[in-house]
Image (cartoon, rainbow, N blue to C red; front, side):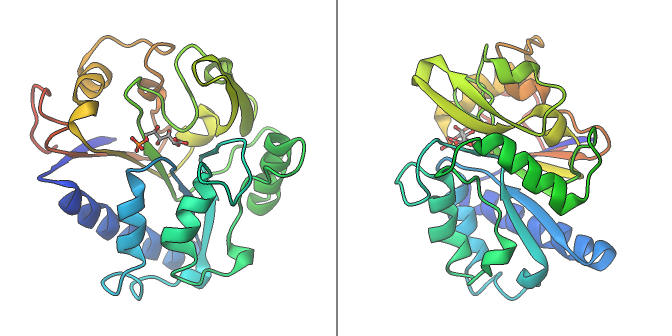
Length: 247
Ligand code: 6PG
């Protein structure tokens, strides 16, 4: 099931997202005694993370039963300005004093990072060899080229069907990135796309209303197998959509 929520601005988008985050988290904790969430990188989620760590939200979920993963990472140390872990740590994890054993980051300081991360996830979710994890929630952003996580247009990782997490060479960035694969993303119970800003309007129209093109528009491959996909979009990003109404 895919739903679209168009928020008046980023603040409303974040409030809507935070309310849904808490609701999904509490439902997961009630059902499974834990909440597993994979965080997004980039800049859009920063204000959402700050809101979740604020007095308005920090007491609305049992963080001791919440386990944090990352949908992708840059090949940098966790202290680097470019690190997705660092951004989440500074804006969410440290302010909430999340316990270290509740945080599973890509060990970018070691070798075989993607394979090690996949093994960590297999162990945490107690998976058999061919199984994929079922995260309660995966947060995603979308780049203005239609990429999501570190699944960039015309890159090898788009074709991956067997692995949970991979390294992905991104020519345009001249770097290897680390990313969940689509089978991992699409096995989640809930997926949020957080898309904000006028610079995303054109690509968002192409992704949501244009022709399907799995390699040119990677975000179009996000289709939960048996979960909910929620596009959380602010009005400026939604301005070119035909039916820019909630559904
Ligand atoms: C990353 C993110 C990436 C991000 C998009 C959108 O590592 O950069 O995982 O997929 O979500 O590039 O980024 P913004 O939200 O900053 O526009």
